[in-house]
Image 1 (cartoon, one colour):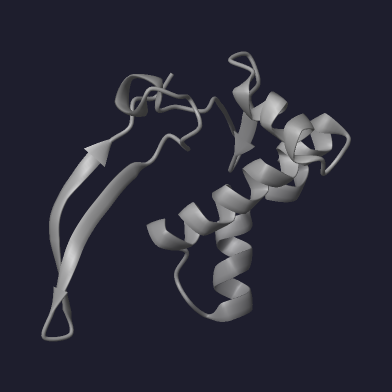
Image 2: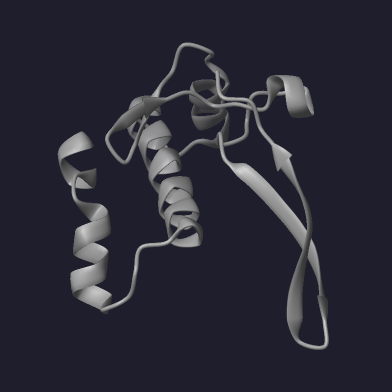
Length: 106
């Protein structure tokens, strides 16, 4: 997987003529970590994939960095990508950030 993920930001920018930003990374990393869990499970069976995701020793490649699932202290279960979760409201067509949940990084 690491070879496939190397340089993804540069590729994205060349291919789309847009900047690879945090929201883009969240979507990409979200899909790729799940793909890696399926690959490790050797199956798309939900129970098999959940077993991989729940393994506290399992790591996945996040844009070239080995990462573990987070969220145990924040949410009571380690099934959260270790990203800051922002929340807000939309008023008159404009997004107002109200705060953030900082998920611990294992």
